[in-house]
Image 1 (spheres, rainbow, N blue to C red):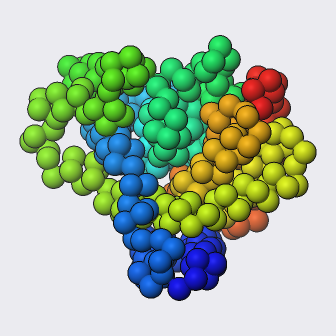
Image 2 (image 1 turned 135 degrees about the vertical axis):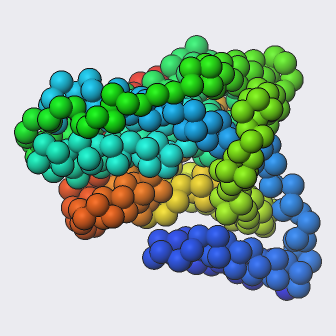
Length: 432
C-alpha cells in the first residue's frame, strides 16, 4: 500500500475518532477502533510497521497517573477533602456570592494537586445542599466551581494527564511549571486566567440570598483521623519535593510519585486495597491514553504531524503567529473533545515549529497547554469535570441545557483565555 494512501487512512481515522468523541461515542471504544484501523493499514504497507509507533506509548506518564490517582484517593479517604469542603461552607459568612467565590478559588487550587472529577464529586453535593437550604439556585455556584477546577488542572505537574504528558516529553520537573528559564510559567499563567474569569463572571448577577446556618449539623460532626491526614499531607509534600528534584536526582515521573505513595499504601492502604486499586488503576483512562500515544505515533511516523506543522507555518509569518494559531486551534478543538488526544497529537507539531523557527519548544508547549485546557470550559462536553458537575446537578433535579452552560462557560472561557494568553505572550515573547 502506498505511503500517501496510508497517510490518508490514518488522517481520516484520527478525524473520525475526534468526531466520534464529539458526538458522545465512548472514547475508549472509539480509540480502539481507530488504532485497529491504523494497525490494519500499516500491516499492508511497506511505509510503516505497527512496531514503529510502539515506543510512543509513554509508560512513565501512565505510571505517574496511577500514583497520582492513588494519592487523590487517600486525600478523599482520610476525610481531608470533605473537611476542606465543609470549612468552605462554614467560612462563607452566610453569603451565596462568597460561597461561590470560595468554592471556585479553593476548588481550582485543590485541582492542581488532585484529579478534577474527584474535586467536583466531593464539593458539588455539599454546595447544592447548602444552597437549597437557603433557597438559592445552586447551578451558577456549582458550574463556576467546576469551570475553575478544570482550568487549574494544567497549572502544576501533579494535576491533569495533559500536564504530565508535556512534562514527560520535555523532561520537566515540578518547579518548571511554576518557574521556567527565569520566568513565571503555567501556575501563574493559568491562575491569573482563572481568577480574572472568576471576578468578571456574569454568573454572580444570578446570585442572591443568605445561607442558613452554614449548612447542616454535618459541619459540627465531621471528624477525621489526624494522624492519617498528617500522613497524607506529608506524602503529598514528599511527592512534590521528589518531582521538583527529579532531574537532579535522575528520577522518572513514576519513581518520583511511587516512592512516597508506596509508604502510604503500606500503612493505610492494605486494608482497603480493593477500593484503592479501583481508584488508582482506572484502566479505561490508562488504556485510552496509551492508545492515543500509539495512534499519534502512527501519525508522526507517517508524516502527518509534520504536515500539520507546515500548514501552521504556511499561514504564520512568525513563531508568535504560529503559537497563536496553535492556541486558537487547541482551544476550539478541546471545546468539543477531550484534550488528551489534542495534546498528544500536537506535541510533535510543537517540536516541528520550534525546530523550523529556532524557538524554545517548551515555551510553545505552554501555549498548547493553555489553549487545550481552557478551551474545554466552553461546553460541558469538552471537559470531564464540567460534565460531572452537570450530571450531579441533574441528579439533584437541576436541569442544565447546553445553552445554559454556554452562557456561563462561554464567557468564562473567553475571559480566562484572553487573560492567560496575554500574560503568556508578555512573559515568553522573547523565546518565541
